[in-house]
Figure 1 (cartoon, rainbow over the protein chains, first blue to last red):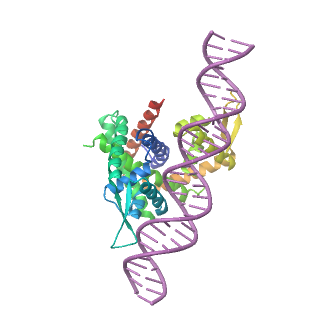
Figure 2: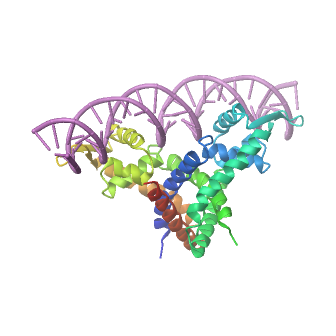
Figure 3: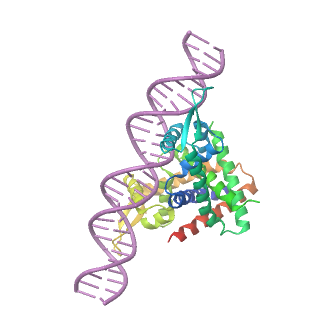
Length: 148
Length: 148
DNA sequence: GTATATAGTTAACTAGGTTAAGCATATTCC
DNA sequence: GGAATATGCTTAACCTAGTTAACTATATAC
């Protein structure tokens, strides 16, 4: 029924405004203090991904962009760079206490706001969304692998 | 199985890198000449959405951002602003011949590149993706309506 | 011990987004 | 008819996030 050409088109029509939507959710509801990429960096660190270049890979951005964004998070006191004695080329990134508390607060708020929308969906729609997102994840992960 | 809280989290984890992926596809393969938002503006005009503020609404950005992006497309000779004698507050946006040809070319290239990835999916995965995208579309459309 | 790879930063640039202020035109309502 | 308001758009000043290129510092490999 749906050809892959339709799918590519649909993808390019739906992903960008979805991104805008998530961004404005973060901005308007989650305190105006954190952007989506910043939030995602905190989330990565929170999950134990502590090396800047690894986070850059996961997020699909350059190391230069990551370096700047981490700068911003350090300036705001959310993240600290800890020297790594084993390999002094890289730092170990940690959330500060402030960063940890802030991250959890924002995560809760952002997810609650998204949840208001998501909860208006029926059960089968939620399942469809979950499955669709899983495919999307697989897609861009394999795309990233192909680049190396 | 999947709570809506998981879904909100998943959404925030998957949409942003998907956007990065689509962006880098556009940049690397589709000639380095058009960004995703620019492409989407051309697509809107191509489909007959000729009023700047309507396109801004569809894309979920401010009129100011739209004005600047259209400026860029006019400068590149892809779009022209035509005075509207009925209501002189707004212009009628048209693709130039150059813009029309260029849009079709880029659309084909971008979709072909996305298709390479999408074609690696199985039939049921494609269906899942299609259904998931439909739900996503419904989600952000209803979110946008709530803002008014 | 030189060559190369890796981690990160900095600089110069661009696109795309914001809000606020303002202009011109339409519409509404007394 | 004329003042108040709404609409469409632009401009200005600003910010974030992204790029590439060039650089430093450290590890690794031959």
